[in-house]
Amino acid sequence: MSNALKFVVMEGDGIGPEITEATLAVLRAADARFKLGLSYEHHEIGLPALSKHGTTFPDSVEAACRAADGIILGPVDTYAYPAPDKGGINVSAAVRKRLDLYANMRPSKSRPGAPALRPGVDLVIARENTEGFYADRTMFMGIGEFMPTPDLALAVRKITRESSARICKAACELAMTRRRKLTIVGKANVLKMSDGLFRRVCEEVAKGFPALAVDYVLVDAMASLLVRDPARFDVIVTTNMFGDILSNLAAEMTGGLGLGGSVNAGDEHCLAQASHGSAPDIAGKDLANPAALILSAGMLLGWLGRRKGRDDLAQAGAAVERAADAVIKAGKGTRDAGGTNGCTGYGRAVAEAIATI
Image (cartoon, rainbow, N blue to C red):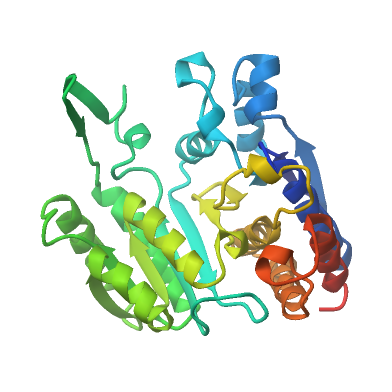
């Protein structure tokens, strides 16, 4: 049986091409050391695809993503896109929705050598990715925002038992491999039906993991606690919008989004994607920090290792993170993270570290 794996690579907009190239240098080094059998299929999306094909996300690219073993996506400049009916599809949201990538796993970790506001933090936010308040993910037809009058805007929130259960199960399984602490976050004291359902379902699922310590924290209290005492948390599970906001806050406490890896995973597919934007103002200047996408690619290898039962992939994913951390600790991270390297130099240093880490 062949161990060959194919990754679809979509560079995206702005700094996307340069941080993607740095990430591929690291993956090539990991492949050389662990003999992973990786190959890459590059596809154009975003603004370049819009100018050539009239859409930021051609149908052929979606088909390629479905057929791939893993997906790597650079940042996309959605603010510069036209309306969806003019071809301006949010590629990130489209891939998550169409491939049912329901679990957005976003670690926040204080890394020695990087300027963290809070040392000693090592937590993961498990964010439900397919429903909630996000207007493009709540309706079968149309969107979940509408204006009955020019002076009234309404939004629909969607919370289902199925989606709540599966994100909590993923969070529980992750917590069992870490410090065995799970914190459920919501606003069930006010959103009694929707967040009440989310809380009940999560507590039901967590009962199947009796070794876990489980608590519930209101989202406004969690915003305070992530500033005051983030090191107390291990795995946090929450709904889409709350997870989006809290994970950005947690990232800033531990060095910023430039150091925050992220995967969007489902039962069949996994997407490695940094959580930061496309930063068009620094594109092409070798100033971007590729650490987040590099760490995301390492997480993708780990996900594949668990799914396929391959220790080599799991070991490679762990080596990517160790190498990324070692380079930062040695003062050779990018300048925004307290180091001396640019984008290319940091990627090269991590790739070199893979061989010996």
